[in-house]
Length: 190
Image 1 (cartoon, rainbow, N blue to C red):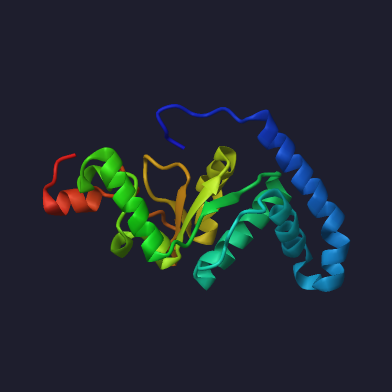
Image 2 (tube, rainbow, N blue to C red):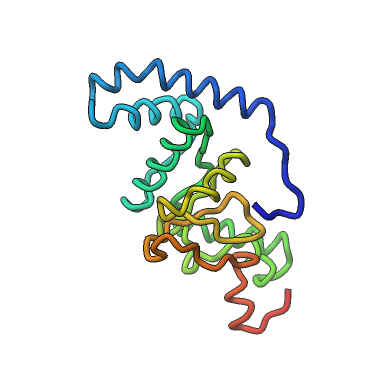
């Protein structure tokens, strides 16, 4: 990932990943009994639900949900890497509140768009955006996400990925920040 500075892996993230993988292995027989053809995915889902209990995957499109589930299953089983969701689908009212708060904090709609978009422009409202954690999980997703049509979209947000099946495995051009299109189209200054 090409951030100005790379965050080193945190020892606790490695520990959480190892514990979650061990838990998934322990849950595998129960998952196999429940759904033999998808036992690894189910055991992974159960283990990740224990690791990230506040995670909410509702509201994601079926495609985004399937892609994210497949990606994080491979990340855990093949690479021992955790990928958690901090934010997925957002209700338009919530998105508007976030945008309004950022306008107040930053001083203008143009500068607010560097971090938060209004509901009509937000991929979170469309159910195709995923804000992930930890940093190492985002690294894994940036490296392997194209297999699942999941792409990092902005230079300034290492955590933000979007489900873009129309890209056909070719990453869309990454933008410096979420509002770059608005700034260019409207000639606003940041």
